[in-house]
Length: 131
Image 1 (tube, rainbow, N blue to C red):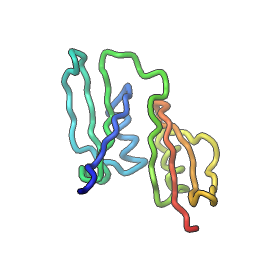
Image 2 (cartoon, rainbow, N blue to C red):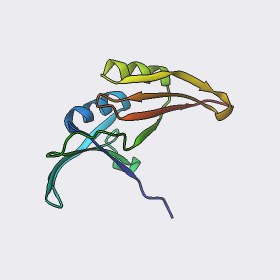
Image 3 (tube, rainbow, N blue to C red):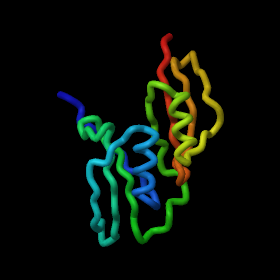
Image 4 (cartoon, one colour):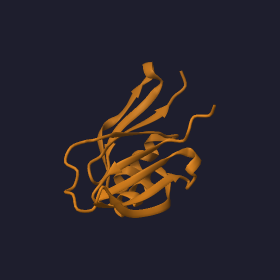
């Protein structure tokens, strides 16, 4: 049996701006925009997928329109990338921030850097390295 493709929803304040950020930094493409209500509470969301391909899972920018912006970290988004140095440049060029330097963690077979998006959501970015 094949595992189903997964999805993650990030609660944010400006779903369009955040969709643009994740598109420019990580290469996600918007595949659908949805609006409606959830238990009477209005929302808007932008559904993103790697290269616009839903079969690879999706990342959803979700906005409860009438709620205050999220205050506390609710999720850490994790990304595996091919070139962490180039990624770090895209992060800062698009309004994100690095949280510390890129670290080589040879014992784990990775290079890693944490970052925050323009609204402050934490991302852990990993590049696999040969053992």
